[in-house]
Image (cartoon, rainbow, N blue to C red; front, side, top):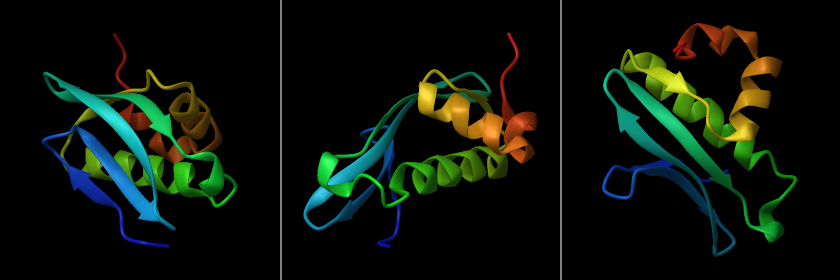
Length: 92
């Protein structure tokens, strides 16, 4: 798997494989990060890239002491399946 890159100017984390780019988009808010969208092109589906990207973003958020707003449905499901990240979830 290629390394995950954080493109702060585009507000996303991405990984490129076989000429295709998968990414997780976000917006920052005071004290947190809103993960808004996960996109994996069809040719890259089934490789675990979405999970790898979301895990990377959650670990980044934890390392930066940011709370996470999981607007993206994939992120909500990921956190449900990986309860070790529940402490990061922003409670409004």
